[in-house]
Amino acid sequence: METPVFPRMHVSLYVSDLNATVAFYNAFFGQPAAKIRRGYAKYVLDQPSLIISFVENPARVQSHFGHLGFQVETVAELNVRLAAARAAGLVQREEVGTSCCYAKQDKFWVNDPDGVEWEVYYFHEDAEFNDPRYEADYQQTSNQCCIAPAVSALAADTLVTAPMAFTLADTSTVAECAPSCSPGGVCC
Image 1 (cartoon, one colour):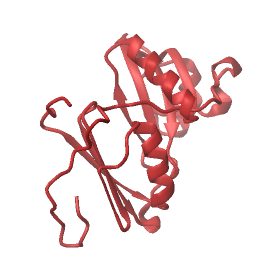
Image 2 (cartoon, rainbow, N blue to C red):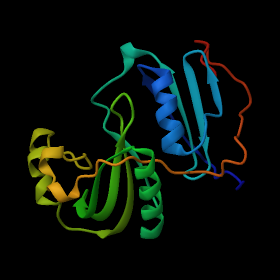
Image 3 (cartoon, rainbow, N blue to C red):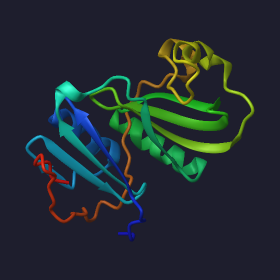
Image 4 (cartoon, helix red, strand yellow):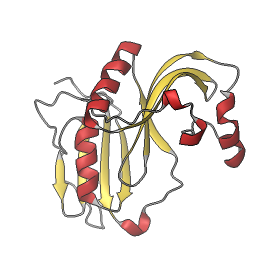
């Protein structure tokens, strides 16, 4: 197992169904949760260096969140991760050679059980424009960038309906953190 990179990013998301969330992220991350407690699950990833936790609280799940994602180092790595993701049945759509957020990228998207979108992408180079197929979506969202295009906006040959899953970290050991709880009793 590699030495973790610090600082490490931490994200905590509210979810409506912890069991469904754990099943999805076990497949997406290619490893089990490092900690599961009543209403709580946490994953500790080495690549990307991330601690992500999920708190079951359906009333606080929000649909206007945006998306999460990570950049891979090479096109070959993207292809390996995409193939594994397809095998797990998680891929929602693919984009190759797209100009999004003023950058030429290859990417694929997955959605967790609460609709949180994850983008896995390879950055080719900066671009001076955004792909015109995003224009309608940008107009509806105050010209925000980096949004997944509506499925209807994609050409039929770019749609992927096959599954997804891949390993993000060495699964031979699962990291544990020292127990500590917030005043509300949520341990991380």
